[in-house]
Image (cartoon, rainbow, N blue to C red; front, side, top):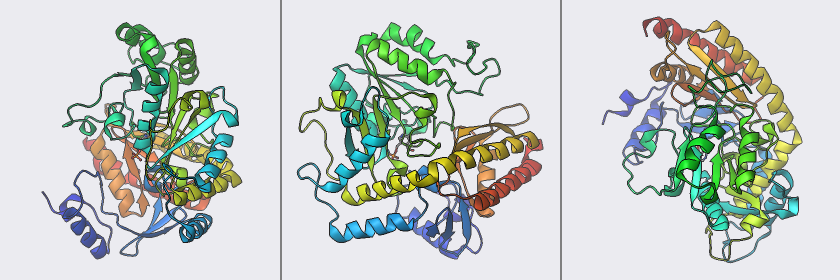
Length: 455
Ligand SMILES: Cc1ncc(COP(=O)(O)O)c(C=O)c1O
């Protein structure tokens, strides 16, 4: 294997970062997908410093996790108070107030199809993939049906059940025989992907953006609708490229599910908890799911997954049907409660306003930079794609922009084939946002100047 210095770029001075990366390489699994040598020391809000003292603006927020920033004083205080009381009791066998308080808050703010607040129930795990595992076990258990429909480009996690739904990159599935079956993938109907199809208009039949027609025409030839337990969807696709669906898609999907008694599972692990300016991204289309999966930003960085479902569905589980030792950890639950309170105190509005502003600036970048082929998203979940002069995706070009951003003091992450995601903390303010966008544009321009004409 090549050395750390060959594989990663480092910002100067980077003695300490290089040292940690080198030790990481001889101690930590190589399965992680780091693309540059950023090594964290500490952070505040949407700014972070590396172990060599360099400052960065953070447009990545630990993959859409740090919803209230690196160490929000209110979250820190709530966590410290809780840690001093007790850190674990085990929700499988004992009761505790904190998970109940959080569940009551989730009952209040998370919309579930045809459910009043008291008709919602919550299950806790520790991660996104555990939320998805719980949701698909629940859907199959409650409906007594076996099949699940998922979408190409989807990322739902890496444990075996979730992996059966993930179809984002083949490397995530390759080498793992016996991935559970009973899953059919269909094309995800992203908008702004196809010149032949306008939003809300007909499908050109070349791009498969009529996902509902695809399910009815093809999937229901293979599987009886009465054997489909659930359709699982990312209301805005994350890892797959930050893709916003056509406006008619989610309402039609809801209708299809209602028609056949299929449960609609919204994987809001990346798009939820206020990231798009609403608690859930699916709310942008006035649709509510039967089951919601959350994790990532829920507890501002402490591990917590939550599944919310109608009590008609989750109430079918009997004791022992599903559980988790750490799920509903009181420290994580208290961090989540404080996170939700902070978001409620004005962040949904500021994310909507600053998200629109960012969308506008990125759209202007697209006008000025021919390598940029698409900008789309909502709130603080915006993706942009890069192509060569023939309109073909160029991952290496995107990687170079990401690297140069890092070298210029901006943390970004790729997504899709040749995209970059804008997924900062919800506390990001206008001044730092502008500083970060200036760096991003400078790096796009400099990579374009050096590489684009030669592609
Ligand atoms: C939409 C979505 N679902 C599930 C997951 C899996 O979450 P975790 O990595 O916490 O298991 C992710 C992670 O990126 C995600 O974006």
